[in-house]
Image 1 (cartoon, rainbow, N blue to C red):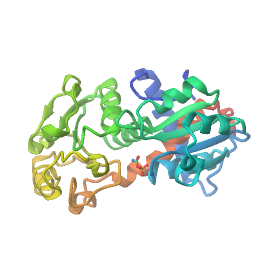
Image 2: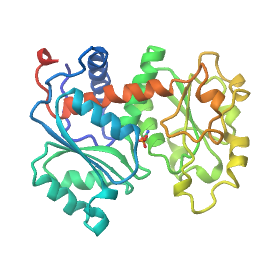
Image 3: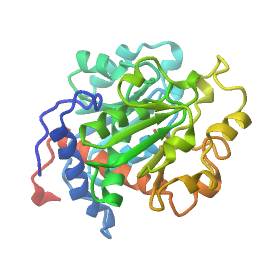
Image 4: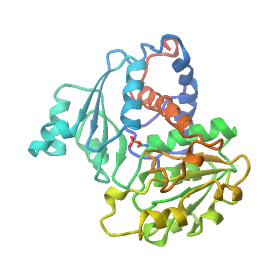
Length: 311
Ligand code: CP
């Protein structure tokens, strides 16, 4: 299996094409472990991983936990809502105290962009970014790429439309970096109020969802992040659905074999209609399954897993 030359996984932007392919190829190799009757290998026996989640999560947190268990790492999860963070303990003090217990890795999700980079500067553990503010969500982009490659046989030459709340989306940013590194074309679509400054320099932006969908090989829908929208970025969710929601009627503009993706959690009836989310185009649950394989690969490569024989 390919070696990975980074100590941390902080984002997709700093990775080379070869780094990304090393993770995807390792995930492809490890995926079969999940189909075995006994889904456990000793690759990371003796390694300790702390999952430190300052924001809510279902998929990311659960799939890191499953990946850690399958690889035989010892792991614990700190949900900060029930930790001493509620008593005012800082991120650095929390991390330093956890480090005093000698873990090998900290997987961190935080509302502030750059929080994992800050920990990487101050901690001796390997740091994995499980989502930082509106900055990056690297393992999400990797599992999206794994799903696309699995379903389409390649990434190079694909056209991927990313549609929705681009302003608050770390998923959009990580996918944009990854897909363009691997030779796919990305088009972005959002209302003008939900396009962050500068993003248009990286990929073409349209405000017309039918134009975004037309001819795309995959359509990645993004969640409207209502919890981050104090400023009235859209007139109403009903209006947003009418203008930007992906419906079966809109899928008539898409290629017959277009894939529908969503990182979850979905707002059904807002950015995506149930008939699309649950329809024949959807690979949304495949993305979740691939999330375990990608997180296994990241753990394995960063923690220097035992030789292949132990898999
Ligand atoms: N895709 C994603 O990050 O989902 P969670 O917030 O449930 O982890």
